[in-house]
Image (cartoon, rainbow, N blue to C red; front, side, top):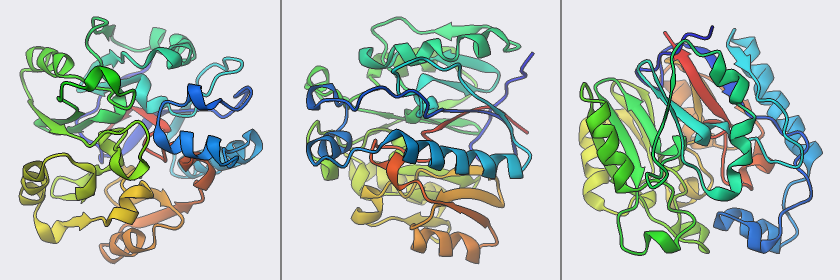
Amino acid sequence: MININIENEYSRLNTVILGIANDLGVPPKEADAYDPRSLYHIKNNSYPIEDDLLREVDNFHNKLIKHNVDVIRPNNINNCNQIFARDLGFVISNLFFLSNIVPNRHDELKGIDEILKNLDVGVIKLPEFMHIEGGDVIVHNDKVFIGTYSDEDYPKLITARTNNSSIDYLKKMITSKEIIPLDLKKSNTDIYKNTLHLDCCFQTLANDKAIICPDGFKNKKDVEYLINHFGEKNTFIASLEETFELTSNILVISPDIVVSRLKSNRLNSWLEKKGVLVEKVNYSNVSKMSGLFRCSTLPLNRE
């Protein structure tokens, strides 16, 4: 059995599901894109090929193995993009929640069926009208930050993945933690005006340390709250371009080890000056599909 426990995003990572880049099928058409970054690369014939994706995910896998992380892989589903495991579910304390993901990604859930059967707890499935994906959920000890979109045009935005109904549900389910919704910018077509998930603009590194990308948030007050909470000296404030490059989407293996994008020079230097070992990985092709290291992983257990 797999013991699950997640209380934050930075305690020592023991067990994680890492997505796979096998058997992606034919490149998607414009009508199949579910985020503006993928749409851009489809239109410009720069959408990544499978061999490049396999190489990048394998390099990431090797970094996890190097640091003694137990890595579990989904079962392969033919003609299905299974790289972004994060969105399929999330763990809060010792509870596993299965996400209600966008309909054209439902096949991905089949890939983790066998893994879920081996968890030491049951799986909680939210009602269908409660939309939520794991990339919008950041557990932070006695708090859970959740990226959402609350405007009336929610149904028209395929990039809006987490709604208020799911937040209300989690408030009732997780009474031991404060549930904090954070509104994100959304656009179906403009990369610079869309934040696909919360982890594309925010990541905790320690109890008092975080990465924040102000341009990803809809409300200035949410940015001010986060900076005040973590302290300006302990917060890496990303630029618009760094937000565009998904700089915050690192994976924290432990408080002193992270996996980060090779070209995130300013963030990597900032972390290294604070004594953090930065494992740098080229993930440039995976990033064309709107995700990096956190998006590719679904942690099941941290110390």
